[in-house]
Length: 185
Image (cartoon, rainbow, N blue to C red; front, side, top):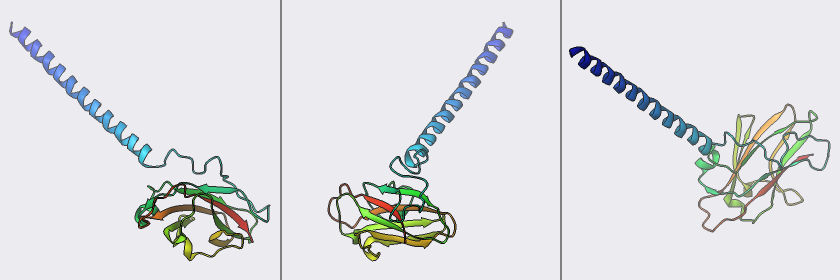
């Protein structure tokens, strides 16, 4: 009789350990699913760096202009959020081609136009040099473009261009978009 009671206690103890183990694995699995979901949805880890309208290789074969990139649907953001990875209005691209060739990165408005003093640009070059500026402080081209950057091609240059509308802008914004052209000079 005592052996039966002891066996029942051992069996209950094993079941309790198994239930605890199952509960632990279930909680761990839930935490992993929530964590991975957060990473996927809160960051742009699964988004392509350059969409179908853009090109990852920009050359200087055409002396007037080259492939176009787009930044669409700018949002009202603070500078802190605008410069962060939370800003989805961004594009990364690489400029390469004939060495010692001068080039410009030029923006052209394609959607609704607002006063350039409210539109901000944050340009990161080769993960080092960073430029934060309002569009109204930048030089204009003869054809109405806004020169974001001028440089000479000494090596491959990787750029990340982020744009947003200053959150102090008190009107509604809709369809604020820009086309980016790389032009040789």
